[in-house]
Length: 170
Length: 281
Ligand code: SF4
Image (cartoon, rainbow over all chains, first blue to last red; front, side, top):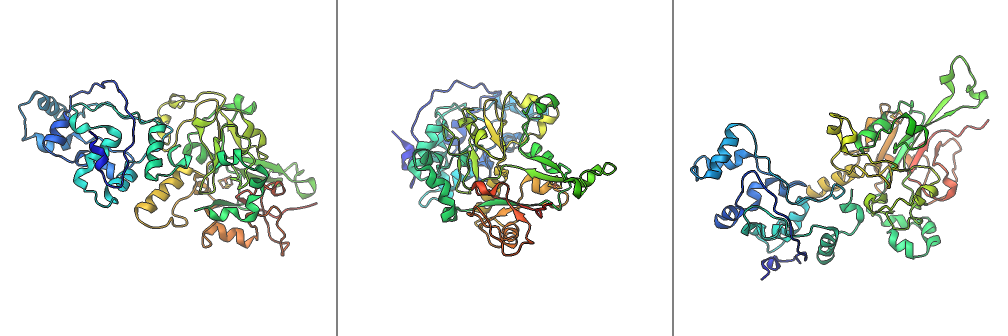
């Protein structure tokens, strides 16, 4: 079953990876937010569509909903504590590429979502899943794709991406 | 691309630029440096250190030729007849020559790389892929300008004493030991400018960005831009001096013109033009 293959004008990259569990200060349930409640990935990772990095949402974004929603849940109480102490939770990076790699989220989203005919922005998560795996079904995000050079290059070949070394190396 | 060249006919590559092969490039970044304006202040060199995360190696290593300066100021003393011997005013006879990678179109460093870590980009730049480099140093030996630098030691983020590590540029890596590195014409700035232009659906505008050296020069001695754009400041300077890319020897109609490229006769076709009257005594 490959949900990703349905993105129009795109051949998803192939490759699997078994990443270690990365502990987080609060186990953020991606499944409840993105799948059950259908929140678009770019609602929280708002920088993805306009910059290199996808960005971690500020605590204020969480509090936008969680001052009224599910305030009695233990994780939300933990989050409220952080908020009241004016301290962001120290999230740990799960998807990381080496320092010498130049990768921009913005260009990839433009190619696969915004400039992609027949693609609907509400289906962004299917494109994110190319490299991040089916995060919609995960709780704490886990690295399930290799994100190495072969993985990127194979996808660039299939989708007509550039093959100039200095496009990605820095 | 270097790999293609590696397997192909080298002499053809080395002569290719004379047949106008470079016209197929999408940009062709070049420099023009007015040596009459250069006061030898080294601001360009310092700016280069800051922009490109260059390691400050210290006096000892500098003396044993292990400096990592991608841009150096060469200082020459005039002939005695021109004032170089004036003991009271030693500074009178000094001339300065900022030397950075000349970004040759027929780069001598490229054919000799055994792993194709250095190659020509579609921007006409002489690129160096650091983590592909195996440190054979062939390129350095083949560079007539001595503008490639070898990393003898590891400099990590922690090599910059706090809070100096805060000024490291995140747009390029801190290179590890055992690799060759060199001036890139601030490729990270070129990349950003091109990305911005593309996002705004327009072409890169001349002068909207600059290399760090050109930006910091107090006398505006350095001009940077796209040589394929006939309206850019840099291509106008080249044109005014009647220096052309793709020609090993310039035959100038007007002997007063003062543009030259360093070691032109070697047929490396460098993209850095120097403006200085060649004085003969
Ligand atoms: S900053 Fe300008 S004036 Fe100073 S050394 Fe460099 S080129 Fe010369």
